Amino acid sequence: AGLAVGGIYNHFASKEEIFSAVLDAYHPHQIVMPALQSVEGNTAKETISNVANAIRPQLFESIEKIIPIALIELMEFRGQHLKQLFSRNFSHLDAFFQRLRTQSDTFRDFSNTQLILSFVSFFFGYLVTSFFLKDLPLVRDSGEKSFDVLLDIYLHGVLKNETKDDKTST
Image (tube, rainbow, N blue to C red):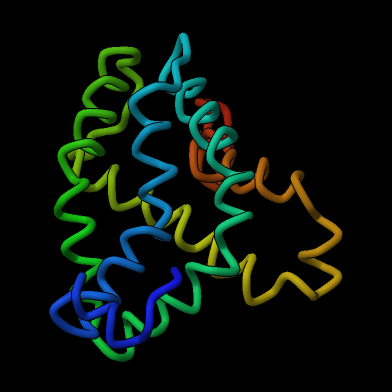
C-alpha cells in the first residue's frame, strides 16, 4: 500500500478494524451477492444452477486467500465479524429466495432462513473441503464433475424419489 506500518493507523483505529476490513474485502460475499441479484434463469432450479456456476470459478480463485483469513476470524474473534457479514447480507439472500419462490411452487416447506442456511452451508462446505483436500487424487481428479454432482445433491437430495410402486413393494 506504500504506507509505513504506523501510517495504517491513520486509516484504522485498531488491529481488529484492519482485520475486519481485510475479511470484508476478501470474503466471498463480494462475489456471491452481485450474482444473486443479476443471474437469471427460467426456473428456480436453473437460477440456482446458474448462480452456482457463475460464482464457482471466482470462489476457487479466492479460496487461497479467504480460508486462512476465516480461520483467524474463527480462532481470534470467535466468528463475530462473520456474523456481522451474514447479518448485513441476509436481506439480499432473503430477496433471492423470495424471487426463486415466484419462479417455482416446487419448494418443500422450508422457511427462507432454512434455505439461506442450506445455501451458505453448501458453498462453505464445498470451499473448505476443496481447500483442505485439493491435493488428494480423489478430489483433484474429480474436478468440475464433483461440483455438478454436489449441486445436484443440493437441489434434489441423496435419495431417489419414491414412487407408489416402491412404497407398496416394501
